[in-house]
Length: 239
Image 1 (tube, rainbow, N blue to C red):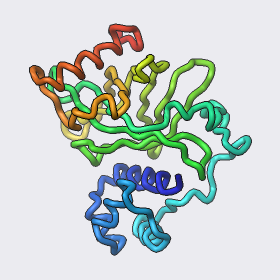
Image 2 (image 1 turned 90 degrees about the vertical axis):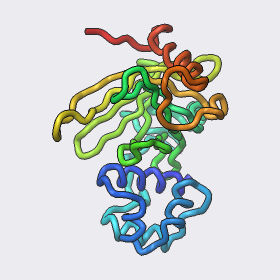
Image 3 (image 1 turned 120 degrees about the vertical axis):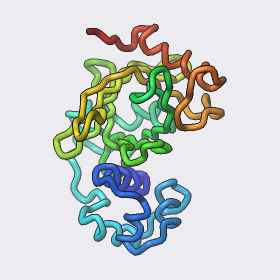
């Protein structure tokens, strides 16, 4: 939906510019409540709100010119030329599980939505409910037939962040590898990779987003799921 696309673009801009939602609301002269409800999907973006947000950010949020699409409902060739009908199975809300980069043995859980962007003609994704909200990612989804994998790609000013997911299991869970940059000493950024699991939200309804430490019931459940990424050969880590 158009509102989903606008929300994804806003999250992307907030993450890229490292500004808070309150700061953006102040810049656009709208209430924080209006912005929060629109981003959560509980309220539609009005034209007046979108215009104010575009003026505050100095960038368009509505897709007036997008990558050429071969035909209606077909993603661009460089994303895999997939059809809307062929990828409906992946659309939805997921709990994303990965190891914590800062605490040994701890699991980090947050949410990822995958949805069809009608205006752009391809799948997009957007992360939410992250403790480090400023680093929440949003981008496009590539699904080439050649590899049989799904790629969640963030591209910001030449920087890339990538998640590669294998084919879904019977439970519709997906496993793979995440590659990104981790904050190091001072202003240094260090490449880092780790296993990752995408689990349909309804299967982990009792799991709260955030950090899970060993010994807790949610941790034991999520540890068992996340370990499948390597145990069942969905990805490999080599030195």
